[in-house]
Length: 543
Image 1 (spheres, rainbow, N blue to C red):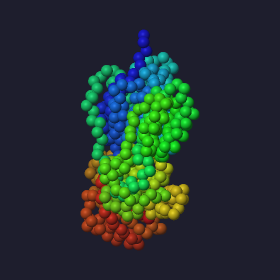
Image 2 (cartoon, one colour):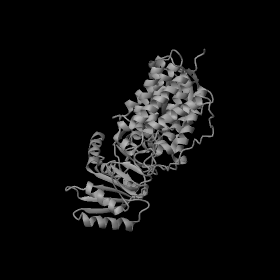
Image 3 (cartoon, one colour):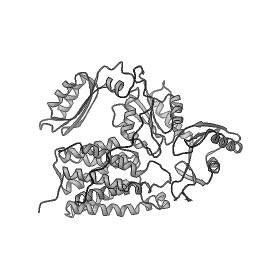
Image 4 (cartoon, rainbow, N blue to C red):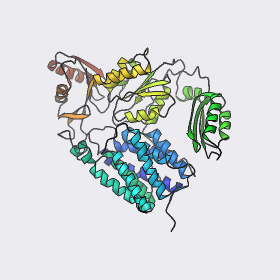
């Protein structure tokens, strides 16, 4: 009997099927979030990451499965949102690395090895992997895939067994992470990975696939602070990017190095990465035709893009000349005009719209990094669910990128306040990283569903106070919540409390709250600013 294999067309159907099935289960996955707040929901983040991968794959009308897996990896990398999305992109990246570009179809062994390498890559990408998460579920699925291969299973049997193993592990995640057990849920990321594999299985089993998947993504506002980027001093006019595929058999690493040397003589901003199976090239040059001609000696050209950078800046984005370059530029993520204006006042160069319920992708962050007026860029994510995407963005650009792991706006502002243009990048990173530990921050919002967490039985609609990633109070009034937060946050060495009020709060309400809290904590200065942020009625800092 002929061995069942996955060819390029079937693999494309599997990805489309998975994206559709993930779309149908998005709300269910979002509801698994431990906190009862809209905090960059897992289902939405994984869906947007997968949709970005599908976009890249569906460009090809015909291609090898090797090319499709690489396209999947590239798309997921660009569209990765939130921690779950970044980890998914790394699972796909490792999967693609195991498949040669000229591979026509995947055997059972190929598929198992791809899953294994995906898990290896994802674990390496996370600095401190936690068990009881999507990583644990993915590892158990990879281990089962290897057992199935060793037992002589065919590919269809392997996928069935992998899903069963993932489900069994997912049920155990509450025993691995106490926060899941208390909330009475399984890990949302692990559940999302299972949904994707069940979508794969639907395509393998010939179940109906909906081709009408909406491949659009939510509109993102352009990064702020872009109106002064200079185009007057562009030495090399054309941004030229392409892949070299189907390289000649005699092409070696030395040949790729020689191509790099030739391109250096006709341009700058050069990036040449890859190996004798696939090479990606990015170069700024005045002779793009010559760059392409050099590359043609190695193999075929794919996904060629040549853009006039002056037109791109001035015509498409409406940017104007005159912005000076800096030794170090600052990029920050925030939501709310008020918070953005505060960052601008302290010379943050680029703002990225994002935060809770609105995690920017790695590609969004990369775009802001590229627009920043320096080749050395510090990024402030200001949300724990955006840190991994920011780190991923740093790998997508030729610039030197340093991510300060800020988890809130107050932490980001504290980091910005100690930034000193006269210090080296290493000194600034050290000072800014230290500063984020000197401020305490909390948020006030409403619960969007009933939940059990941190010993509390929270009811939908109640106000909740979040301090250091934990819900520490719930009540029916904001003053009661804020008082409870202050009792936890304030110490004898603190001197200032700052309230940033959100888009649904008036200035009068915020001032009245600060006066009421000031009467209780009379030795501290109370400051009030219009943050304009969504989701949170108040962001509070104490220092």
